Image (cartoon, rainbow over all chains, first blue to last red; front, top):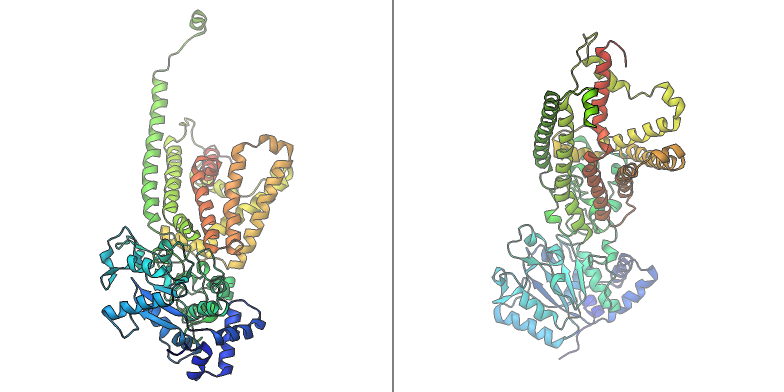
Length: 365
Length: 219
């Protein structure tokens, strides 16, 4: 068996120029908040890196993450990075099916024990939930995950479902869905959240793993800080309109046409930490806010239960208006009753008021 | 609990609870006051009650010259931060959105930089008021624990709102959650403390004006 090709060889075979490759390395360095002088080091490390084995598990998901990460209109360096990782199991993309597919997974686990990366896409029914809600080849998602991560170097939870539970976990969570980090406690878990996530974030994480053999610095939600360190709001090109107080109030008013801030249309940018505003989508073509659509906050935990997508961030969740009305009616009734009682008491006191004179008082004392 | 869980808790169930306690408490108090009414006045009326009552509600916004001369600090700083608080509360666009969604009525807001400046003045005013209260022997003597409590519950929503707007606490869901929580504390404390003056001041002013109006005197 021939030695596995290095990444550099594979890229050259795919027609990626040295210049294109170095540009990618420089971009990766800046994405990871490293000094530009690190770009050659990244290039050198990537050139010599062996194709890492990646096992991709798809559980309760919509395949949107896979679509986002693999389907690009023109091949980019990022795509080729994907081509040259050894994606040994991905039941959406692989040709094999049934036993053959499961066999490929087991083989990859044995051949690369301790070194392979597990990418999980989608949430899964927890250990106490009915496993029948999601199975692959008759194996429950929970069982497959626990078995596969045993020899893994690290686990990457791709998309908000894998990272935080996502839509399957939305109230009332019928399948008992949990996130990967709820189950995987003894391996590093990197959350690449988003619905779907920005493709460059996943390639960035993989590039760092290949380059330094380390995992990126993570924020409190286990997300790579380099991509999730700043909020959409802070990097939004519409921010000056927010600061000036110029807001679009409907999707087709003058403000919307003039590109004003979408806060009042429900933009969750202020609470959302992601790289959309800087890295954009579709090879940097645009991103939701640029297309006139408010940010949904899809890279944040619980965004699916965080109130209406088209309601401003300051709008409370639930029906406080009803609580207010009910309590007000009750309060008014109680207040009137209390007032009436006091009046009655005062009238009774007047009615039964005993008059005494000085003599009587003296007698009493 | 993650900051996001905290934000969703404050935006959801806690807000409903706070607003229900507020409505219940304030309406019990107001309905009781209004139901109690006033003692019957057997003297013949010399004038109308309603018009002078309403006029006094407005007129008491202007301090009389004597009060101003005696304590200019209280009049100036007090007016400044009271107006600032009301402007920030009712005219900041995210607040307008909140009121519109809860009560169904809305109005135009002010540009964010204006509200920002007003909030800064309000914060300084509140701090100055506290310092004055602590350093003036008479004020200090008259101050009760309740006075310091209501200063704190008034100050905190303004402070946390300012910090959240300027994104000085990270992550933002924590900043916003703290701001909403402090506003909820304010709402809950309001009906059971001196903060009821937000509503009862107007009832008192009306009665005052009406009593004098009935006697044919300007109040």
